[in-house]
Image 1 (cartoon, rainbow, N blue to C red):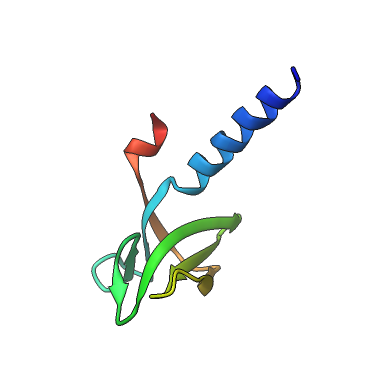
Image 2: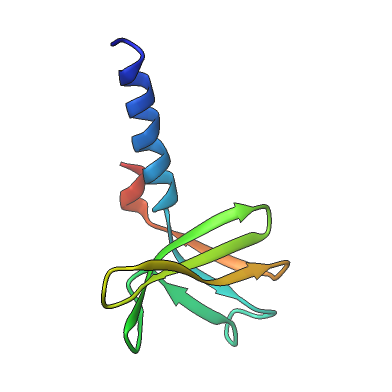
Amino acid sequence: MLYIIPIFVSLITIINLIKMIRKISFGTDYKNAMHYQVGQTFGNITIDTILMKAPNTYAIYVKDDEGVIFRWKTIENMPVVIEYDLKAFN
């Protein structure tokens, strides 16, 4: 029973770390970069999560109208600007 609490706390921490990236911009200069933000919609899909998969590799996951989440785009070896969700640090 004592081992369940640390595992549960670490799971909550991992979930909060996943939701920390709020916006990603990638391209050679910020003004002309592609910008993707959590909650942004494209037709019938909405950006759900932006994850850092490895150093300099990011994945954007989207949710469709039926609630299905899938990986939409992977960004590798590109200059990026990351904006974090400050509420996720609480």
